[in-house]
Image (cartoon, rainbow, N blue to C red; front, side, top):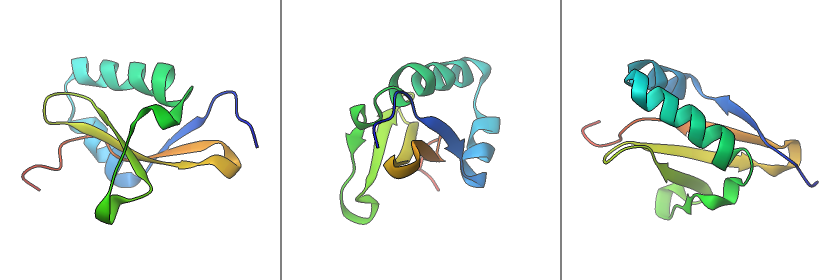
Length: 87
């Protein structure tokens, strides 16, 4: 299936992450999701090891957007939207 744009969905953990972001980072997240990930989800960095099959895009110096692609239904599922450091 070829998708023009992907629908973006969030896990409960990612929704909590977004609520904790500053307004500036929320806007940056929205921009990255709409203009980069929804259009070309493979543009993120493919992760390795335990996170094989997931992708990552830098949101800030320490924060990352971690997501997986469900190509069969044209959905990008955002897993995390904040730092994993210090968890």
